[in-house]
Image (cartoon, one colour):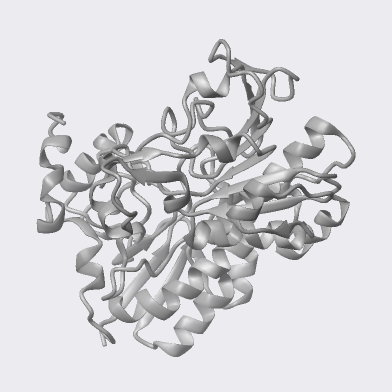
Length: 404
């Protein structure tokens, strides 16, 4: 078993993220389970677990982590905070050639850092082993309901970020009164699972897409759509999910009929830029477009939903979109659509989200790091190492050099 000194770094991205990769309890449990693993935590006044909570579990808390081999955070690390010749774990948002993080990847290479991106930690089945998706769905759906109460009256939910944990957040849902509101949710997986968890906890009835389109209800309902509900093949062939993933440009949008029967839309889908959009600006400004609130958990700016013109923040989660002008407005103007597009939703329930995330690290990733297991997981998720891009991410060369 390898001797590893692991450091939990403070978050440096602005606005600050309060999540952690490992909770105080998880650090203590790991140290007891693996004597060859030493864990230190960088002091921080902003994270959801205090320095004292780590100290109470016997974890060393210090200002500098110079002696650590491996450094683990959550969000992107500021360039001037990167320490050369170390292994880092964080969500880098570079592998899809995001232009705003090109310089970060360049600094990683220059400093000979091994960058392991959480997003690409997968098992042999290619399924991700660590993610915050459930919590994005939980908070995103809650924010959608909160926006409904603020816009239409009748109830007022406390901000998710003011709730200590999921239990307190779910207790708030007892206030929800929706009348005959119809809610549409797009997508599947962890994100949609988190969203349906909240809608179910709020007492909203789930109906299948066919009934949603054909029936009238005297109580609030929601339905969930998969890609075969809101797209179809251009050539008229039956929908094939594997083909859709490989050739999304071969499909067209069939979403508008669902939108026409919806009051609140919760977007949890994954969207490929080659895929059809869900709705156009022309459709949104058409007479009778009923959706008044869009909780865009996916948050693809200028993507499949025209009203998502920017990301919003935990502090100010809502803005308005005027479908006629295409401009931003105050969030609850009657003629505008209310948009929720927070791009770090799990940060609103940081203690629960961190504990869930850390459990997956303890189970799947730490054994790989220590050499107890070796499935190739860390290699598959290593974007750079030793001053160069790894083979699996060599396609980023043009992006890194500013040619893509």
